[in-house]
Image (cartoon, rainbow, N blue to C red; front, side, top):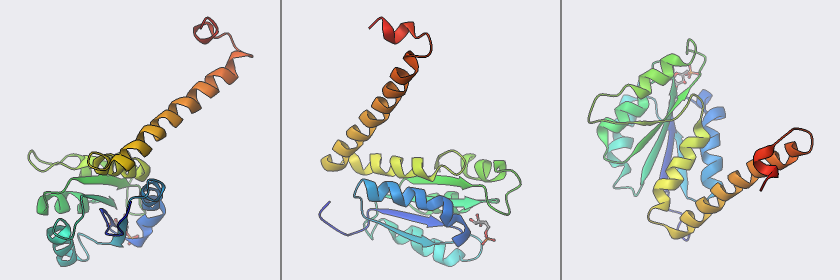
Length: 175
Ligand code: RP5
């Protein structure tokens, strides 16, 4: 990609979320998509959250990945303040009981204000969704996504082939 203007914003409620959220950044790096990453807390820095969300679109971002744990209000509140797609990452944090609190806080949004919620701690998938959003308008990213999918498929086919010698696998052996 030719510009360094961030297209995806990765935000999280605390630096303690970074060990999970860095997986989203790694995907965007892999797809060569410019991004920014910072801490925005819905509860501890509410005014910063409002400023971030309300200015995100005008600043050129195309999607926001928001991660938080426990009473995880950041993704939903950001979604309420922007027309950009918001991808929510529930984090199993130190203040999360078992992860379900984070999942449900992000998942159970009211009609009209969706957050595209990935699985618990699944920041990698959030990065892939963001890449897919960017890929709708960028053919280089779209090509990388096609290759990524093909690599996933080939990895499984190789594993299946590896099993065939030791285990009965009529499905592949008759091909
Ligand atoms: C949430 O509280 C954050 O997103 C984090 O997951 C959790 C714990 O934050 P710290 O107490 O570690 O800063 O708001």
